[in-house]
Amino acid sequence: MRYFPAIAALLLSLSADHGFTSNDFRHPPQKQLEAGIQIGPTNVTEFEDLLDPALYELISKGQVSIVTGAYIPFTQHPNYIEATQQFLGQARLGENVGDLENYHNGRPFPGWPDASDSRAGEKIAWNMRYTYGPDESETQSLTWHYKNMKTEKTERTIEMYGALMRFSHRHSRAPTPELDQNPADLYSALYLQVQRPQDIRNTQLLTYTKKDDSEAEQAWIYLTAQRRVKRLPTGQKTDAFLGSDIMIEDFMGYNGRIRDMQWEYLGSKEILAPMYAFNALPESYKEQKLDDLKVIKFQGAGECFPAVTWQVRTVHILKATPINPTHPLKERIFSIDAETYVPLLTRIYDRPGKLWKLGMVAASDSSQHEAKNEDWQGVITDGVSMIDLQANHCTTLQFRTHMPEEDLRPSMFTTQQMRAAGR
Image (cartoon, rainbow, N blue to C red):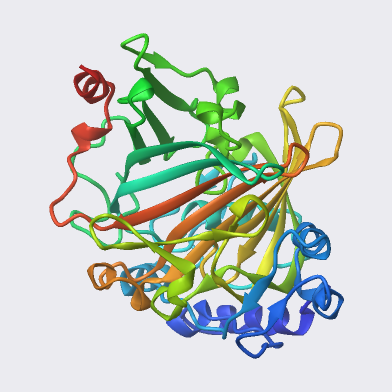
């Protein structure tokens, strides 16, 4: 592992001495690899210090090979940068884990994490929660594939529609910083609706993330067979969602309350991660949908690994340990990109402490994506893979996400709308 105390000290002094600028969002790695290097079982030991340990084992066993890409800086929306500057130093942690005080907009805790700060991990968690993303986005085609790594067969395919709205802490679409109507005091809402196959068509999920982390979580599901909306108990957020390898709590890296975990900053290092320029990917890495738009493929054992190039990124290593003793996990270990605070790789350990799953987020910079996403100005997730290493099984997600031409309606994110859509 390569850690950077000198860089950390420099960045801390910079953030203390002047206003936060767009340059402070960029953390190019010290070690950069030539693009086009294929890393497989025969040469993986040469790159061990740049590989997540779970990924290193999988490459060593011949289950996947990855190809390097050149480092590119990832853009952040100028309004997000401006808000970070405007409110620099105002956000602070409260007495208890999960208490965030005086946060307005932008990155809550910019600058390099302080290893001597016992609550540095919690600050990273808040930066991850409030990382930049468009205030409104739609995924017209969200394809889930359930795959058996032993038989190399796809067992099930589900097509969904997805939408995400930020009700507060908005940066990219009027009204800002909050919608005029937000009676539930939400930060964001996520909505999913199954379009195919027919037997679960119109199954829907709605989750709320509150501004106040002390408030109880809220999630609802509409099951086609029952034809009613059901409130999900908190415990069901850790069940397999629709029989996949993904929990609702896994959505967007971590879709739970900050106060429900203990957060520990384990240091920063450089690793290879699936970040790239979508437009620069070889055509062999993509597949074409019926409307001529393209999505990334998956490769390797069971086609469980994103077929993209991997570049060296500077990441913060963050451990999340559940406070609830009945939680099915012992811990999650996130590799969080230092520029964007997107969790790129996640190792998940079961209750006895054995490595259970490896999650991967394949992400492109919006400036090098489809033309309709030029206004995004941030990270676009093209694919997700969650590999159950114990069961030799995976679930992969292919996204085609964009900013809607017309504003989304807040009423889309209600239980009333779920009932209407299910009729």
